Amino acid sequence: AVMYSDKLFLLFTVTLQFCLVVNEGGEAACQEATVIREILNNGFHRDLLIKVEFATISEHIAGCKVMFKEHLPKGLYVDPYQLASLQQHNVTEVLLLDPIDVEAPEYLSLEYTLLVYAKPDPKCGGCFSATVPIHIRYHQPSKQYKEALVNLLSPRLLVRCNTDLLMEMCQRYPEEDAPCSVRDRTSCHWKDVLFKPVPELVVRVPVGLKEHELVVGTVTFLVTLLSSVLVLAAVWKHRQFYI
Image 1 (cartoon, rainbow, N blue to C red):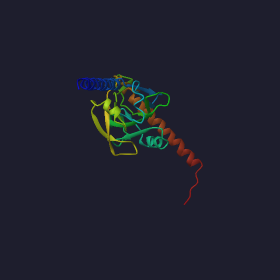
Image 2: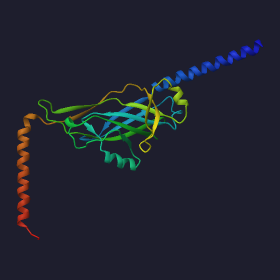
Image 3: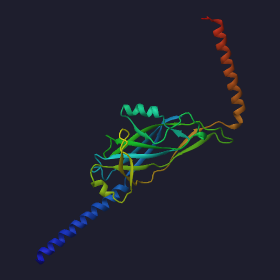
Image 4: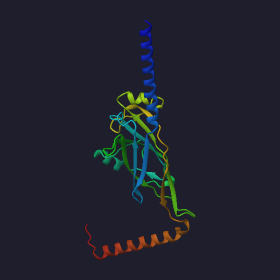
């Protein structure tokens, strides 16, 4: 009986140690998720590249879904029609939580939240990535600066899996309800996973100077007037009237 009790105690101890190792390793693994963000291209139409790498738990992440919750500042916007076209071609999946006015200038616009559903990256094991086309809004002329700075804050990383293993490994992270996908708007439980700190992205936007407003306005008016006169003259010269 004593020997049986000793074996049972030893088995319990080993099992407990194994559970602690798995749990502690899982928590560490979740914290070691690495997020990479880049702004690609130049000009007023660019691409936001978002990528996450689960290096130490790549074998457990298969079959999981990954979503980035991006906060879009007033100086940037996404085109809903462009996103719908990309979604039809299975390129990018982005869910807009609010309607977006693509014509509004920066000073009349609002901030928006985007749900970006990342896809597994075939070039990287345990990686998920997404590319979102973003556009820069028109900014008011400045009194002294030739450019404005638009800060893109760090996103939130949400993960959900069909299996409970990864969720148990990351059990101390809070849950959040969010749409399961762009096509499935029903609510799913996502884990709000921590990741290594990532710096904010800064987009530099060229703006006009207020001291040039009179000159630019006058030249624009004269060019528009001259163009209108030329068009009317051409129509009058080759006029054909139909009743």
